Amino acid sequence: MRARISKMVVGIMIIGLGALLLAENYGYIENLKLERWWWTAFIIIPCFTSIIKYGVKVHNTVGLLIGLWLLIERIDLLPNDFADLAFWPMVLIVIGIIVIFGGFGTNTYHYEKTINIDRDNVTMNAPKGGVDINDRINYVAVFSSYAAKNSSQSLYGGEITAVFGGIEVDLSDANITRDIKIEVTGVFGNAIVKMPTNANIVVKRTAVLGKCSSNYSNSGPVNVPTIYVEATGVFGGVEII
Picture 1 (cartoon, rainbow, N blue to C red):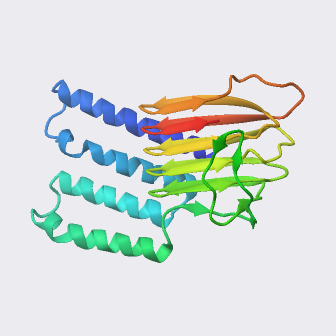
Picture 2 (cartoon, one colour):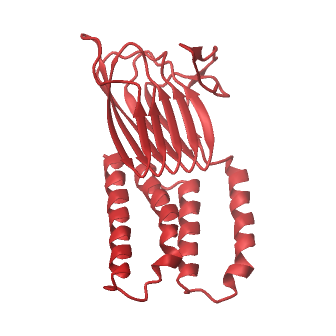
């Protein structure tokens, strides 16, 4: 439900920004100075969406504050010398927060020892901690990149998200016992997912100035469970292999 709401919010915000640009270009709106601040929306929107989807976290809160600060500065609501005096101190504060909290990727794994991940001539990066065996997955990379491998014996579905980052998830050894749904999203980032071999794969692709590719034709063997993949690329890419 949250994922659907977040996609709706992203769509509405992008449509609104486009409408404002169009209105200003045709002279219906004046003095908005859109050319100075429109790009800050692509910092604010992903962070705001992340808060809706995953709750208030360090990465999405800091990112949202930075985006709002840049927006306020670009529309001249701050003193003229504020940016020069405050920018680098703010950068140092953000870096310090990153160091304290260990980066922006989130991975709630239940690990077992990993084996090699090279299979069917497709090599995925190996996760540092081992193989995740959770039945429901939730992998998020924001301003970071990492790899995950899941070998659940009864995969239940979940979400894979890259925002200004990159993520590779290997599900090839996971077991599917029922029809499930997996949402894969890349917002100014890239997500690559290797699917299990014991299921049909049906991919619904949505790309907004991005790319979604799939090795599957939405048809496969009968009498096996189906994985319904919702792949969304917003200024980013999703690859289902």
